[in-house]
Amino acid sequence: MKKTLLFGLFILSFSFAQAQPENPYCDGTRYVSEVFQNVDVVTGVQYGSNTTFCGTAKNLLMDIYTPQGDAATQRPVMFMGFGGSFISGARTDAYIQDLCRRYARRGFVAVAYDYRLFELCVLPPDSVTMLDVVVKAVADLKAAVRYMREHSGDYGVDTNYIFAGGVSAGGVLSCNAAYLGPDDNAAAYVLSAVNANGGWDGNTSNNYQYSSSIQGVVSMSGALHRSVWLDTDDGPLYAIHETGDGTVPYATGFANVFGINLVTLQGGASMHNQADQIGLPNTFVSITANAHTAYMNDANRVTQIVTGSSQLFHDEVFCPTFASTPGVEAFEHLLNAYPNPAAGDLLLEVSKPANERWTLEMRNELGQLVQRFAHRTESAFPIERGVLPSGVYFLTVRFEDTPVVPMTKRVVFTD
Image 1: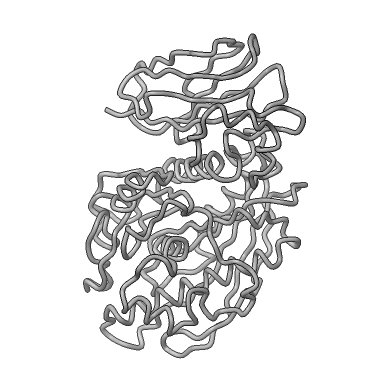
Image 2: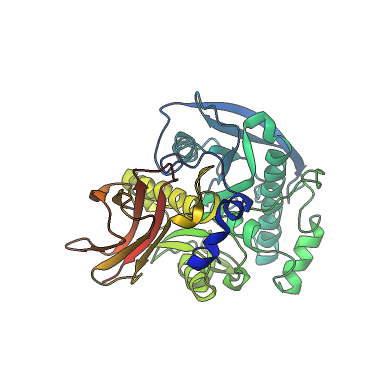
């Protein structure tokens, strides 16, 4: 029901806003912008142990990235999984370190983690083998999530807000860890693999008193085995995918390892369509290219991913736009924009006390400011699209006369 509350509900005032699990550091800048210059890293923290498909015992480690000099003690967490077809890759890969640092500079706690890989003891691999390998990796991520909840006080973690992202295989395991559960009517062969590896929470650690739930996903060329596993009560999805991906399918197709079609997956386009159908908040970036994760070599694209996903989770999960600061009645301020999506101009509606001034900033997915209007008092304000290209934009209204948390609205311009 995010962002669909009628204005009348806001007469419940601040008592209603207080009841929401809102992060205490929402100020309209933190999380959506880089507010820290430097990052501290704690390396080699063991979160669990288990045995690989090939029988090798493995201690599983994580590296934890935090904003240097940050006084906050309740911060959302972003787990970041590496790619490599569940055969290769490491938490120390340079692009994973870069992603973790980018999120940490925005105020997140970011975590790069090990997960068990397939050591090629059975060649060629088949679908049953790789399904078991993926289920083991999912169990590892869930154990890592539980570890951070268990040790939240050590790392300044808000246990309400844990997100998972990843590239390629890391995206696949993040999607399945977050969106597949006991209520999803999974096929018997999936349930068999899950049960063989300790059940829904896995057997990588035994701290089951802590939740392994994930509140949102960043899928960089990732996929679900079945997109219908997405439910209305799941966390938001940010997905990016290349149209001609021959490794992880853009829509529906086979995952390809060593030129072998192994298991059917449904990638970013299919997950986006399902999310739209059920009303799950999501952002999808489609790239026309016959490639697999080539965009990770483009610094602007990486900035787009981090900015867009941070903004999505900020708006939909831990800093919802109806939030208020203590002492200010939430029902006095409400933001809407329509039509949304818009092919042309749109109208911004700002419900607020009479004559209160506000400033509007519009930014694109790269976080670049494209329009700004200051010292406005209107309740209805037309926004001319002009030459703005199609895509996702974020409208942030900052109130100038009362200490209300800035409100952000995600809008989409279409062709």
